[in-house]
Amino acid sequence: MKLRSQSGFVLPVMLSCFLVVAIIAAGMLSYVSYGTRVAGIYMTASKSRLTAQTALDTTGSSILNSFSVYYDAQKKYFMSKTALDWFNTYTASSIGTSGYLCSLPATSAINGCDAAVTIANVVQSTTSQGDTCANVTLVATVSTSSPHGVPVTRKVEEVICFSMPRGSVFDHAYFVNNYGWFQGSGVTANGNIRSNGDMYLDSLSYVNGDAYAAFNLALGATGIITVDGWGTTRNMGISTYWSSSGTWARPTNPTSSDTSDTWAMGYDGTSSLKQYQDILDMPYLGDLSTTIEATGTLRQNGTVLVDGTYSGNGPSGVSGGADAGCLVLDGTSRPIVIDGSVIVPGDVVIKGTISGQGVIYAGRNIHIVGNVTYRNAPSWPKPDANPATTVRQNASADLVGLCAKGNIVLGNYTDSSWLSSVRNYITPPFVTAYACDDSDASIGYSSTFAGNYTANDGGQKITYTSKTVRGVTTYTASGSTSRRYYESAVGDQIIKNNIQSGSISEIDAVLYNNHAVMGTVGQCLFNGSMVCRNEAIIYSSSVRFNWDSRLGSSSRDGKNFLITLPRSIGIPSLVSWRELALCD
Image (cartoon, rainbow, N blue to C red; front, side):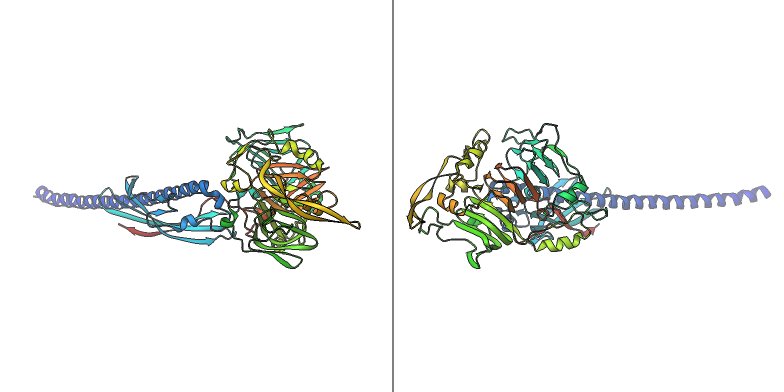
């Protein structure tokens, strides 16, 4: 009896245990199944979100590439704030100007998911630096299924800023699109220097910044920097720079002994030679009438000479003469005042004091016949204990651009010594042939310019006859004659009448042109930035290039002043990102 009683007790217990174990096992299996299902959903959701990001990145890259193709074909038109009009035409599936559309692909498979990107909106705006930008809103929708067949959809919205900032060429004190050269113990650059080809430096020169050379297949340049003499240039230490560079030179980084107060793009006391770089885009000035927002004014002696675009006679006064559309600007007795961008269709002859913030765009040459100096120049104390104050003060200081579709010519080219000094540097083989913008055909540049600036350009310049009565000589326009690339349409006599006594010793301006900066100066300061395709400056004793750090793309005092300088494509940036929906 006892044994049978125990047997009857154990069996139910064992059955109960088996039941409990079965229940637990079933629960565990259910839990594992549920967990696996949930994990699969979330892993699929994570995969879908990454796929959405991939689709957005791919689309953004495609838009940039298409815009770049358009830019390469139309870059001559990218001087004004209409530079991003390409983005104004858009639908949910495409963006861009006809012929240069970026069509978004229909739903496509990415990472095993169905991905589609649409354009929700495009808004033109201005960045914090004052640059023109197009904010493009893209929405990526990704649909797929988890391993258990559960549908998963992710929607991600991204706003990308495509910008056309001031060209990065203006980040340099000296930039040449061809062969760069710094020779002579008197050459100093307070700022970076760069060539879109090889560069030749003298070991006696000072480069308080970095020097760049670029590989350029069109020039046959490998991007090397050759330093004659000791094999390296010189540069100043911070303490020497503080004491001897002057207030015009860019600030240091850090600004003072307080190493926590930094100044981006300031001089850090080092100098590097950077070879084999990529070339930087230097856009041509195209048809000024269609590319420049000429809404500014130019005053001389209190009178408005230019309101937007100049349309008067030249200094000869001859209606329809060879110098029509040319201007002589003389600020020696009273400053020339500029506000915004203006266009002078012909040549500009300039000297004296200039004030304001703006750009003079010349349809041909700009002839600098004397010192050009700011009335209210910027200043960077060294060391600087109050950099924030410096930024505020310099924001209202003068900043003027002199931009020419032709050349910027320095000094008195009517003097025979001028041509003998520069001839070897404005003719082949020093100047190699290069492609030109088709809008420069009207000023004598064919599709490919042979490189001889001493040749006739096919245009005319005014001629004058003289008459002396009682010791007073007067000059009267008497016709016209052929003109060389470096000469002005105003005629030799106007240049002679306006050339300053003594050599040019200071030029305060941002210099930019389609072709060359050439000529003679004395012991000279260039304060601003000099950007050109070819450079042929002959100086006396010493020459110093002080970069205006207000032009810097990331400088502490870089901003959009009231000047519209040539632009180039910027690196796209992310404005915002958010997830619109998570459906499972």
